[in-house]
Every structure is written in structure tokens, then in C-alpha cells.
Image 1 (spheres, rainbow, N blue to C red):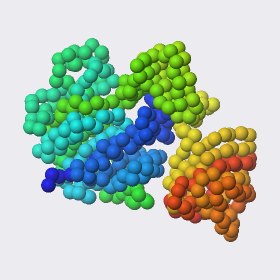
Image 2 (image 1 turned 30 degrees about the vertical axis):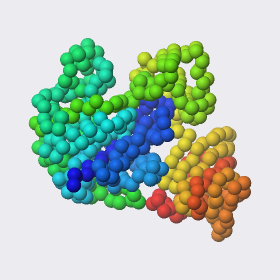
Image 3 (image 1 turned 90 degrees about the horizontal axis):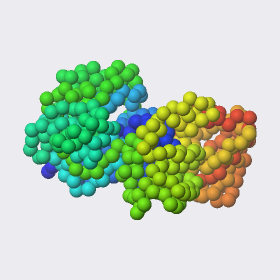
Image 4 (image 1 turned 90 degrees about the vertical axis):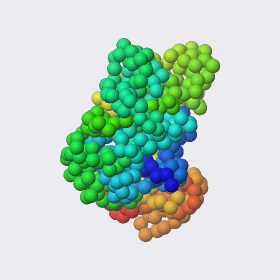
Length: 475
């Protein structure tokens, strides 16, 4: 029987280059761009074949843990572990921690496949051929990276120069090349034998840990100690903060791949993009006869070669060319596609101003272990939210010092506790929770519970919650 691969999905990155859809608290891997899945969910789908893969290990952080769990649950995709990084330490410590955990769970002979969760990939036959070639090469002790056959002289990616041919279609690595200027990129693409550095890897766990002990002993020591002292919390494995913080912040390329004599590259012809800017989203999308890429809730008239996306309001675009028009629930971005690499500078400007900083941090919709909420309207001394609760989940038993709440059920059945009284509310029924009263909301049903919440009071911040009992350990 051919050995299964353990996928390791990196899902902790924070990026704002795809603002306003991507925010610090909801980055691009958890956003639907074009299609019915997020990039993280598409990554899960690529490792869903039980004949090829074990259940994945996901690396993320405290802030994204419930997004990871919920988006996996939506696909009914079991996870082997959700590993929480207490501090950001780049990819080498993260991969080392995953390798240490996998060694404990499966042994050191197992093959691990490290994948980013924010790539757009066409998982056709050539993709899985590359995966199998990488597995065979990694089984021989090589540290394997996937090199994408370049389709243009891109300057936003690093490159890999291939060397001698190995079995299974891999090559030795001559060198890694930093993001090049345009003239150098043109030379490499014209010469052939150079590949985009995809940031995806395949390792035998024991071989990786051995090379780490040679070239990055401080990384592997800190990561191993963080796993040994890790704690369990619900579905999450929390790396020990003090141990993990000892690791230097360094990428797996700098720590290992550029130093080892055992690096190999699998030339990979499948379609790949890191979706680092709006023009890359346009390039990977399906274009209409006028070269436009557009989603639902959009109308385009006399416009060409443009990207038009909406996650809310209807967008009507007329007489435009080579532009990106992107609408989230609470902000709209308009700019030339050729300038989309500079969106990060715009976000820095917004983040520096008190009036707009929140637009760079959070979406109106926030997720919680029990479901989540969407902010609909904020007024003077009142706000309106849509609350949604997953079947079988309940919020904490809590009270507020500064606000009262009105709940109106619009879908499902709510179990409402107010003081000593417990009552059931069904669609079109409502209840009032006075200021200071102990209360709790639960969904005892089989379908999603949705309700409209109207808050009134002198202070409506999320930190005005006194948790008395909480099944998620937050009281």
C-alpha cells in the first residue's frame, strides 16, 4: 500500500492587499472571491482524497481559530489538529512545530505536504501528478519544493533554478533567486529551467527534522519544546507561548531550503497564483468577451478588461477600462488594475486615521465559537445586529452593565434564559432583556438560528459582557 501524505495547511497569515474584502481579522484565505468556497476551503478540498491524504493539520493563530473550525465544518471535512501559534514566527518555526506534532502522531517516516491556504490553484491531473512525483522524491530523503512553470516574467515571485534530473520528474536545485527586476525575470523565462517559487513543499518528517537540527537548531528546539508543552482547548492544540517565542522569525526557505544539499524541485505545469493583488485575481478569473471578470450583484456596460466584485450592494459600472471596483459590506475600492500592487499603501493611510482604521481591521460579520453576528446599523445609543447560532450551540450565560437588548427570531428556534426563567421562541416571536439581567441564548434545534438584535444603552462595545458561565473557557 502506498503511504498516505499528511497535509499541513498554513492559515495564519494576515494580509490587506486585497482590501476591502481582506481585513486584518479576516484575511484573504477565509474570503470567497469567485466561486462558492473560500481559498482555505479550496485548499481543504484539494487534500480531501482519503486514498492519498490523511486528515490535515492546520496551523493558524488565536484570532482565526473559529474561522478555521467553522469553514472546515461547512465542508464536513475532518481535521487531525488545529495548531495555534501564540506569536508570529514566520514559516520555519511553524513547519517545525507541525513536523514535531506529526512525528508524535504518525512517526518520522511519514511524508508531510506543506500548503499555503491563500493560493488559487487549478487541481487538474497535472497537479496531482506533481503531488505524486513530489511524494516519491521526498520518500528518497529529498526536501522537495514545487516550482511553477512561469507563464510571464513576473517580478512579484521568487524563482528557483533547476539542476540535474532526478527520478520521478524532479530536479536538483541549483539556487533560489529573490524577486527579480523585470529585465532579469525576462532573461530567466526566455532561458528556461527557471520556476516560480510556489511556497509549497513535501518532506519526509525525519529528513526535515534532521536538516533543521543541522542548519536551524534553535528553530527546531523551540518548536519541539512548544509541542511537548502544548495544551488542548476544545478542538485546538495551543503551542506553549514561552517555548515558541524562543524561535527566531525566519522563513523555511532561508532556514533550510537555501542551505541544504538535499533540495529538489518538481517542475509543475498546473495553474497557480498567490492572489497577491487585484490584478492577479483578474488574471486568474474567467473573463467575458470584453475581458471583464465579474461576480453576482454586478452590471457592466461599455466596460473592458476590468474586475468588478461585490459582497453586498449591487455595483453598476459604465464606460470603464482596466479598473478594479470592489465592494464589501461597508467599503468600496476603485482603482486602476495596474496600480493594485499599491493597495497596501492605501490601507496604511486608512489604518492611520481614527475615522477609518476599523475598516482595515474587521468586517461587519464576526465569527464566534457558537456562530457569529453581522452589524447592520449603528446609531446614537443603539445598534442593530443579525445574530446566527449553529445548531446545538449556546452563548455564554452573561449580563451587561450599559445596555438592554431586544431579540426577534427570524429563523429557527431559540432557547432563551432570562434570570430564572427559560422560554422557547419561534419565528416572529420576540423578547426583551433588561439592563443588568443575567441571560443566555441557545439553539436547541436542527437548523441555523437567526435573530435580529436591537441594543440600546449608553455604551454598546463588545467588551461590555460579563460572562458567568461559558463552555468555551472565556468566563
